[in-house]
Length: 244
Image (cartoon, rainbow, N blue to C red; front, side, top):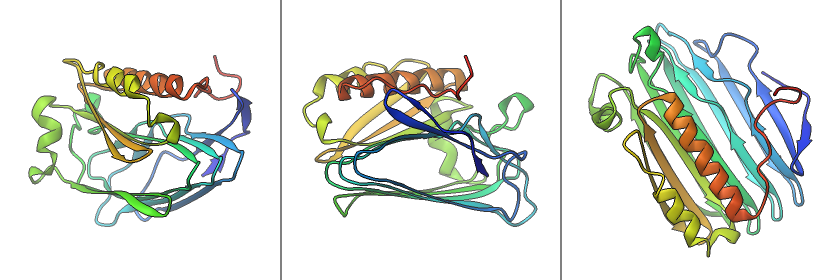
């Protein structure tokens, strides 16, 4: 893993984290710890989709800790995670936001290499996310997905190759932004479903499922645009420096 050359856009430091290998392999353990201090603005993203490959019996693991101090802003936008056939993958995320800090945390999951006929062909995904706001546990999410049991049925019930995404949002500036949440609800369509709800004062969750990667990305971009508009800020570009 390495960090590409950071650059500024829309008064935000844009940092791309790159895995120069083919993806995560059996036995890989990755730890990511990011702290955004008061007055700093950071967009942490990846230049392309992340992949995990077939594993014989072991697993790959990602542990990430993201913290935002009072007066800081963090947007976390990794590209799509693609678990290939036979993947065993574990992910644990801890989000800590102080009073007056702001967070936009996105993540998205493909059912596999759909074009190669590997839809829901992974072995097991274990996903854990904890959100702390003002030191209080605001959200705890745990799920295990395996095609061998009923755990993937909700993802496949509406769309056979369902693509999933979620977002956790923390900002006191959105407490009175009812039109924003109504516009997000209005993005619901036959190709992409969306739901959002308030967790506690100053924090929200958004869940999305779509029929394909193009529909999911379009929906995610619309959600991102609406959130930045409600915050009154211009969204920094997700591209790398020098890319069109």
